[in-house]
Amino acid sequence: MNSPQIKNYISPESAGTDLTALELKIKLRRDHLPGKEVINVLDVFHGTGKIWNFITDVELKEKGRKIKVLGIDKRSITGVIQLKGDNVKYLMKMDLSKFDVLDADAYGSPVKILSTVFKNGSFKGVVFFTHIQTLFGALPKEMLEGLGYTQKMTNKIPSLFNSNGFEKFKNWLSVFGIDSVSYYKLEGTMKFYGVFKIKK
Ligand SMILES: C[S@@+](CC[C@H](N)C(=O)[O-])C[C@H]1O[C@@H](n2cnc3c(N)ncnc32)[C@H](O)[C@@H]1O
Image (cartoon, rainbow, N blue to C red; front, side, top):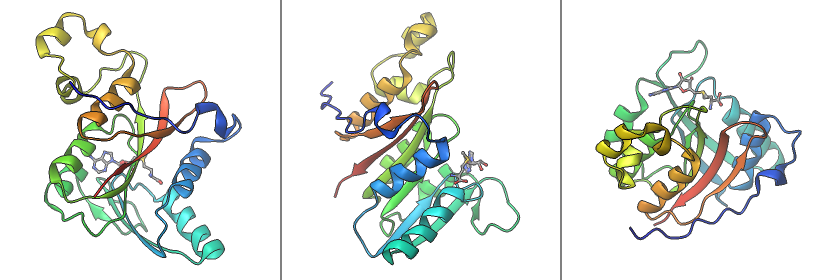
């Protein structure tokens, strides 16, 4: 398999150890916003929209930039306007070409939603993601198969194939032509917050 070298611009340490997860996520996004006056964001794990509510306010106040956010969440949340339902189902059908940013702040692995974005083919722009692997957590079969590990292999010694989840995730992205990923790792955890670009 031809895997281009993934570059990591941001060392996990460079953000400082005193930032919370939310602060790291906000910093990552503000540092990598596209340089446009109006930015369209599709936030596919929207929740209460904490991250983008903050960024929208501060970018408008400090830089006069307008950020428009469309959220998707499987829960209905009082007071939050968003598309309700499974994000994969939406992304299989939506035209993503009008969005500049796609946000995949997942609870676990973002593989399923990102593979849907790659298959959809209409999104070009900046992708933010959260990648979390629990210590003994199994990695998505789809990712392992994409890397050439057959089900026969993974069933035999699951622990071997479930190690180094984030390294495997970066290699899996390279299969789709992603050659550069920037990220922070939250100190003392397996939580990675990252960004990459899907180019025109
Ligand atoms: C980590 S929270 C997101 C927090 C959010 N980024 C914020 O700024 O407040 C993850 C959210 O994803 C939603 N979610 C999980 N799986 C989903 C799916 N398949 N489709 C849509 N929403 C999903 C959960 O309901 C939860 O609200």
